[in-house]
Image (cartoon, rainbow, N blue to C red; front, side, top):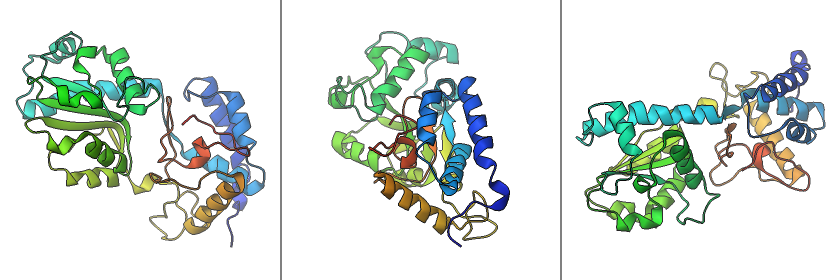
Length: 301
């Protein structure tokens, strides 16, 4: 049977749309407006399309500003200090002293935070620049211990560790390009740590090809979080509803994207339904972020 609305789920769209609207009103979902939600929902017309929209909203993994700040705290209070102690790079007697040091103007401090991408100071729209801004604002990290990628070749001799910050590690392709473009493999005597807020497990595995790099994500997603994953109990069935097949759900999505003039997938596509307040990664379904004459996005890219 082609992709269809299961009999017992005909009320799902109204239920999910009401709950999502409530989360917008309460500030649980941020970075978009009710009017934008209305325009996005208007993209979907048939019963099958509306059911598909409900499943996307229901499965959405969203990280608000508060959650991003919590991830920064997790990195700076726990994850990063543990790594630095392991390599005798943590001379501080307490977390409080460490955080104070990060806020001081000290060009000889042995640590630098680097945003992934955004080589130039003018690249204000790049995710790496945005993430660095989050760290500066929330953790009060001093500008003197941040570094743009195009300035890595001018680091003081005192620097012994680079902390690359990012919102999302997906396929690993983007970071591999970043490694190549900035010649990271040629840098010697410096510890390198990549700390994305969210990482996809296959991307983490892909970066193990770099033995000089340590990947320390705050949150890890895997194949179970992919929108078209199959049921663990009944292979072939769509894990989301256990009734349609995963292949039929994928075919329905591809046709919908084609009809609306947006890409079905991208080079970095992972079929996730993940969004951040500041942007939506292109690892997520294009129905969330793409735009065309026939399609209004829910979140900005």
